[in-house]
Every structure is written in structure tokens, then in C-alpha cells.
Length: 157
Image 1 (cartoon, rainbow, N blue to C red):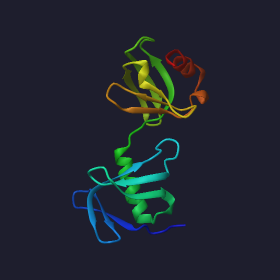
Image 2: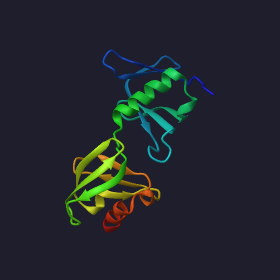
Image 3: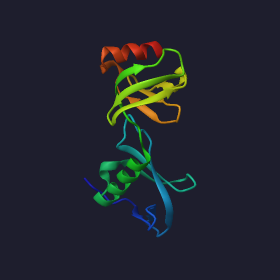
Image 4: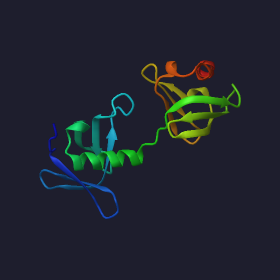
């Protein structure tokens, strides 16, 4: 079921999102943000003004019309980059900092893990690993990984 919210979205000539509210107020350079990007990515989307104030709340992305939903999905995709680790191929050392070579849903890559505190436990069995450049890597289910990968993770957890 698709409904039209009390706002409309469009892009300005520079590609930034503009929100027009029901009362005709226009807000430039708005940003959609997921409330629960890992556990419920299709629910709880907030549209924020350029100064961080919430302008609109979208309980479920699927409730939006095609055009509005497409604009939000495009904007989220351009802002969110969180490769998902499928396997840990090798690590340079069990001491940190260490270089990890991993297979992700976007291909094989290497990153530097500065310290064990950069591996965060999320709602079990998920983990979030931040590399030395601040890129977040997601492990959705550490228990479903191959035994080699699980053994490496166990040494750091």
C-alpha cells in the first residue's frame, strides 16, 4: 500500500534533496537517515534539515510512493558504504594494529584494525568492525562464517 506523505521531495540543480512540506515551506539540502540501518533498514527513516532537525518521519519505506521512495533510496545508497565481510582470508598478526584481508560482498580488500576496541558487538550475532580510515565493515552473522574466520574473530573478542 503506497501513501503520499505530508511532504514532497525533489532534487535541486546541484543534486541535493529539497523537501516541500504540506504548508509550502521548502527545506534545502535535506538528508534521509536510517534509525536502525542494520537491524531494520526499511523502517524508521528520518528526513533531517541541513542543521540536523527532523522534518519528517517515515515509519516504513515501503509506504512511500515510487518517486519519493526512489529519491530516498538513491540518497541513502550514496551516503552509506558498509561492506559486509563474508570471510576473513588472513591477518598479519594477532596483535594490533594488524592488517586484515577479507572477502566482502563487494570483493576482496585489506584494512588495518587499530585495536580490539574497533570491533563492536551489535545485536547477536552481528559485529561491526571499523578500519583505521573509519570505514565500517559489517559481519551480519559471525556464527555462520567458516571455521577459519570464526577462529580469528574469537581471538579478538
